[in-house]
Image (cartoon, helix red, strand yellow):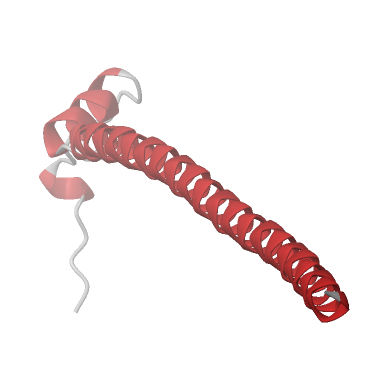
Length: 106
């Protein structure tokens, strides 16, 4: 009977020891899973922020492209020979030179 008691006590000690190891193992696994989940959520949030930033940059690029097209048109208008001639005649009181005023250089 005494041998049976010693055997039962040994089994109880092993069960309690293996139970505590299992408990710590589950805590470790849960901690690792939480860390992985946090990394996934963090990377997803970062990716979403980058997508919004890309959308803002594309919108800004489109606006700048439109502004560039307007400025090119304005430049072409400002460089127009007809406009320059009109300003020269009306504001600066310029005229074409007479034949006597032209000096040919050789």
